[in-house]
Length: 146
Image (cartoon, rainbow, N blue to C red):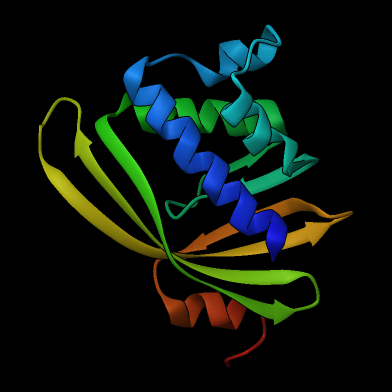
């Protein structure tokens, strides 16, 4: 659980730095110029990370992960990730209840999205992140509900 808690702590620090000075995470990663908080986020990810976001889009590898984050942040004028709860569900899998609070860049509309993410660990790193719109789907994914 420690790696996922540390991941979210680093995400919060990285987002704070981002909003002080917006930049491309992809470009920083390609040029080996990531700030310490962003580097800490990436260091907690397995090199073969697979992230399927709540919209069903799948990204594979750290560079694709960074591109996905860039896409998300470029669509917002404000974005925060809040962790409500993290539960160890066995077999190196954790369930996180999350909230993203954002304001759209072009619309200016603020909103909150509640969702759930299942984290799979490998070699002490985050190997997979699968996001779900509700707890029931996330629990089905980890075999705790039929």
